[in-house]
Every structure is written in C-alpha cells, then in structure tokens.
Length: 453
View 1 (tube, rainbow, N blue to C red):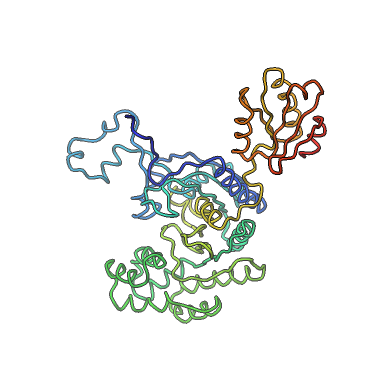
View 2: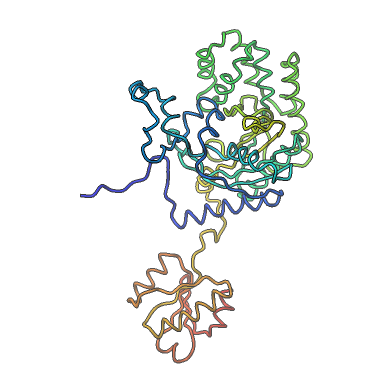
C-alpha cells in the first residue's frame, strides 16, 4: 500500500478560496506601498551562506535552512571532519547556499551589488516567501510570506514616521485593531551601560524580547544564566516595568538614563517620532514599550512591532532602523529603516475575526451548461463575448446530466447558470438561471451582458 503523501511540518497548502483571501492581503498591502512611493523588487529564494550567516545573531544562524551542494556534496569534507561530526565546520564544506531567512539581508546585498544603478534614497517593497527552521506552532511557520518596505540612503526620522502611518493605513483597510509598540535600540544600549554590562547588550536584548512569551521571572533567570550579576538584574527591573502614557514613560527614562549619552540619544529619537506621529493622528494605538528588543542584531535605532488587539497571536508586523547593515557587505554610510508585514499571521487574524469584505472569494460569474457539440459551440461564442466585457465565464466541459452540471456550479458558488439547449439555439437566446433565488429568464447575449455587469 502506497504511503499517504504529506507536506513538511510548518508548511501549508492553500485552497482556491484561501488563495483568494491571501491575494486580498497581498493586494491591499501592495496598494498602500505604492501609495507611499515604494517600488517593487525580487531576490532569489537562495542566497550564498556567506551572505546570510552572522547577520541574525547566533540563534538566527541556527534557524537557517542550508542547501547541500549539488552532486557529491561530501567531496570537500575530509574523513577526519566527518568523524568529528563538527556541524559548524562541516556545514561550510558541504553547503554553500541557504534559503533566505528574511527579506532584509537579501535587500542589503541587492543594494550593495546594484548601488551604481540606484537613486538614493531608495524605497523598495518586496513580497516573497522566507524560510526558518523553527519549531512549528500556532502562528509560527517554517515557510511564510513577508511583505517588506524599506528606505535606504537616508538618516531622517521622517522615514520612521511615514512607516508608522503606512502600517496604520494597512490595518485600517483590513479592519484589524492593533497596537504599534515602539522602542529604540539606543535606549537598550543605554540600559546595558547603566547596569554596568555594556558587553552583554546582545544577551540582554535576546532575553527581554521574550517577556511576553515567558514572563519577567524567566527572563531574569535567563539573564542570570548569561552572567549578569543580581545587582544588574535588580537595576534593570524598573526599566522593564514602566507604565503610564508615552510622555510619562519618556520622562521616567530621561531620569533613569541621564548618565548615558547613548540612552539619551535614543530618547530624543523616540520623542521626535512619537510627537510627529501624534500630530498626524493614527487610528491605532502607539505605545512606547521598553521591553521590546527584537532579537536581530542589525537594528541600531527605532524598533517596532504590531500586535492584534482581538486575537491571541504573535507580532503581525515588525521592523526598525539598521544603520550598519550594508557595512558588512563593504559599503559604509548607508542608513536604512524598514518594516515587514507577516502575511501568514495576518491571514490567521482575518480568518479568526471574519473580516474579509464581501466578494473576496468571488468565483466564476456565470457557467454555461453543455448539452452537445452544437450547443457547446454557441455557448463558447457567448462566453467570449462575456469575457471581452470583463465578466468571468466558463463552460462545463462534458455533456453530462443536468443534475451533475448544476451540482458543479453550486459547489463553486457560481451565482448564475446559462442554459443553451435546442430551443435557445433555434431562437438565439440564453436561459439565465439565478442560483441564489432560483428564478430564470430568457435573454439575448446583450441582455445577459447588461444584467451581469
């Protein structure tokens, strides 16, 4: 007995109805990207591992899907290396490529590679799948789509302001209530300074980024395991538990980080972004969250995440400023800031809240029955006339029983069935049946076009 086929864990098939919903998501985001002046690019699914490794931190590197070299992938590995089972060094021998982990690092590579062809500041958007060797769970997949917008070649914080309003507009169109959480990596660096552990900034940010998932007590345990002394952990607590309005949090941070030049710079940048966004007005809530860290090492300034208010799920959008990213590819001085919409999680949120507009899953508008060769030929001419008018139409391909043909139309939720039998063929008419209320009438093709448009 043949084994039942399956797909890898953390991946999904999508039905025609689901694809209609996903395309609604992609089209909505794309429309807003274009509204804000972003241009589309695409990059390969695979990148050289030299491009990907070291850009996401130690944890991110572990989640990269590596691609075995073509042919004899063991040819460059010695017997000694194989016997030692040293995965780190062995990987460099048997794998030269990997599936992209996100769209930002490939974008940085693209900018460096094509910099002489680009006009800066360069605003791009990109909608493509990415892959992460993560543990699959609700809202977390190994293959998923990201919808990114980035600006490189500008230090202006107006870019952050614009991206926040862009996020707000996308979710306004979706009808999803959100909270946009905002922080600045300079504030996190300032915190590391005042607790006397600037060299532990990566460990601190990776740990406190998990507060929502594992709670502050488990975060404190992780910080202890990473070598922070109890005094430093105690000093950190009030910073991680700030409350009140954004202005109150900023005022408290100014007192707590007064001795840190880096921290004060982060507060200045945050205040600029928050004040300008407030002047423009948002449908969403903008919240300063000092515990927001985002584990990716390349963020250097503003960082943000978006949470849905009415569905328990992880962040559905994230991003930040990454001043030094292109520097790892040999080009310094190109500041960048970007965001990424998690299309798969947005899909889950829209499904949970049933927020898709009517007509999202619209199918064929009218199906013609098939009663034989002559009738089918006449129906095909009518179908072409309808399609020229932008009306979706199809013919049942086989001369089958009427019940079977009607069942097909009903299963596809086709709202109209056009019948061309012997009588209609002789009269040059079409019997149009409304599948919703059961009514039907004889019409000319011009009348059908007028009715369906």
